[in-house]
Length: 215
Image (cartoon, rainbow, N blue to C red; front, side):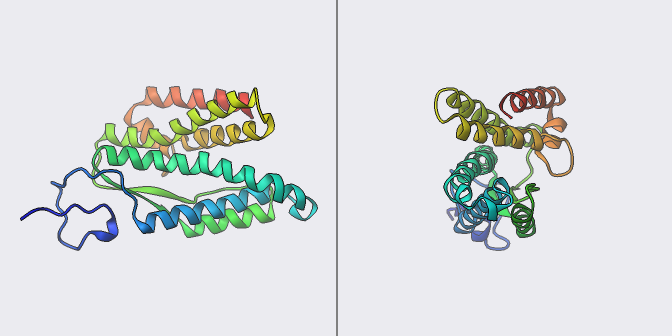
């Protein structure tokens, strides 16, 4: 009997999964796409309001500058980060899907509107399987490494065109890379450190230098 390959957690009937699965190609489930869109919308609103704090005094800035720049920042910093985790996980043959954290998104939205500060825990890519230490380190490394690359690219562009906008995006990417490399809790830094402390030190130092330059 030919084995059916499932590309989403939601498609796997109970009892039909075994660990000898065939490596899936890059796929997105409807649930994952919905969670990504909701997360990006909420984070864009939260950051736009935080950048315009207090927003009722800067309505024009909020609409014409903060919102479009926040959207560009969220797509490059948050979406690219999570997709890097997903694609790397799927490269190793694991089902990898993003799932939002509703409480974290609500907290980010509240802080963004009420204060100029944001603590965002919007969600994470869930890996279905048992990656090795090396695989887990590379999957974790993919997110902050992507942010570092994006930060460098946008900073380079800012030297020639729309310096304020692109430097803003570069700074957010650099900050996200630096924050996620903290070796605590569920952050990427803990997995990278566990996999290879030398690589973790190099990435942390590089992210910090870039953040100092672009911030």
